[in-house]
Length: 300
Image 1 (cartoon, helix red, strand yellow):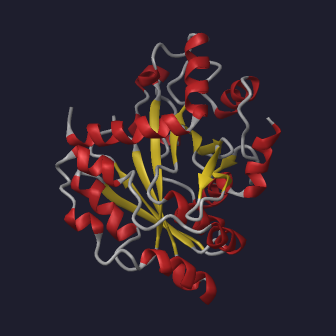
Image 2: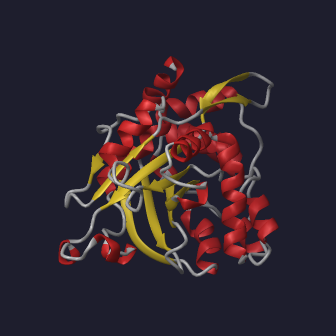
């Protein structure tokens, strides 16, 4: 197993433990004979959230994946949410794409900036520079370790009022934000997002309706949906506890590009499908962790 495979395995192992929806979906797919084992599912992409401050952000975290042969692709900007992002193509198609977003901290109010920097200023140098990227255990531990102290609940709530993204990152840090089930190669009845979403609702999975259940790109070739973020019991620095947004599961359908539409289904490969991402889709997918969506999870 390569270092990259080991790192991805460590990421997914912890993620599955904290996101019960993953096991619920996998077990239901196996029970219905759609897949034999969870490994039959294609992981379309995984996503991370970062803070745009000195020593951190996209420019820091991307070093890990560039080291493993990922190639930096398109940039995206989300003006209203004060975010930017970039995606990375894998060295081989058997690996997931990487999507890294970053909060443009300098565009937030002075009070919010001060709260964020009271934590992130504890990071005195780019932490990735001191990381042995050929040591999968070290990288796995890094991606699940806090970079700053546990926040005060008052600070978390203050950030939540201006930027729910900021509040999520200040508590969850580099924890994997989501992984994505690609439905394209699943059997008939499950290989398009409309049918797959019907299956999800039938097994009790709550889907985010921000921007509609299905987010569709302008060219109609990339369709995405997501679960509402799992709620987790967070313990803050003064010992107080309450539920906050954790991570979620995304689902993607990448349709065949028009120039390859003549090919029979058994000849369709990943390279013949819609690649990349869509800013308008991603903008609404971010809201899977927002309180406007997570409140729906409390109704289950």
